[in-house]
Length: 352
Image (tube, rainbow, N blue to C red; front, top):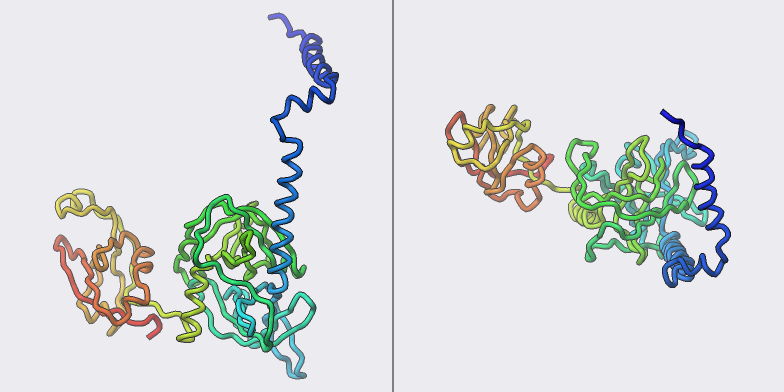
């Protein structure tokens, strides 16, 4: 087989490049889409201007959160660092529950260097959120966005204190909405925002902002060893948690007193019983005297639905147990052997 003419190939390539290089500047400009040369700098200026404006308005409300302990000599000894954001002028601030931890004392550090003592108002490990109140008034704050929907592709700006570097700003876009992320207590956090604004340890608890400077989420997690995979608890969830904590001192959710696991349903059995779902929740344990035990559920039962809504997984059952079910009778449809039953259950407040 004849060898390829490398000289010819290099000459063809070089000749094409040389021809392009020899084009007059006017001809090269004419080859671009109309207005592209003028439009690109304008778009970059608009993008930069939007980020700068958001930081100018929202930056003063973003704080460092220092959990720690008061020593015997009265000095404060921090043992961690995170971020937070004021949501009211009288010092209420949101952060992550994992930032607060089990600290006996808390401090918030303002961008101007002031340190304020803070009290823990309440926490919700299920959504990794905690509400603090700093001992001050007339503070800068930002609003939680609970009205406008969040869309993939929109601008997302994160402000926080990664690795202790105060008031650091990163920007990206919303990658997706409606993600699920498992919290520290095992519950799924629903409707989580995925975004590309770079995050590092210390960003936890800081705000994710839109181009209007309102909070669309509270940054909570990153995927280790990955790039552009940040997650934020949506502002709608944060707003609901804040109201629960202010009203009740904790987040109230319904419970059945059931321990279970997700189990697939045999296709033949599903066809015989006319079941559309492919899985259910198998009851593995019952809390003594709990709602499920009182209603007559047994270990080995398979829960098919709650108030007519399918419970194809343990997570699906947990999602259905919102505060609206507390103290209100609900219908549980279950499979006991090959028999389909319906029982009335009265869920209790989680923690009762």
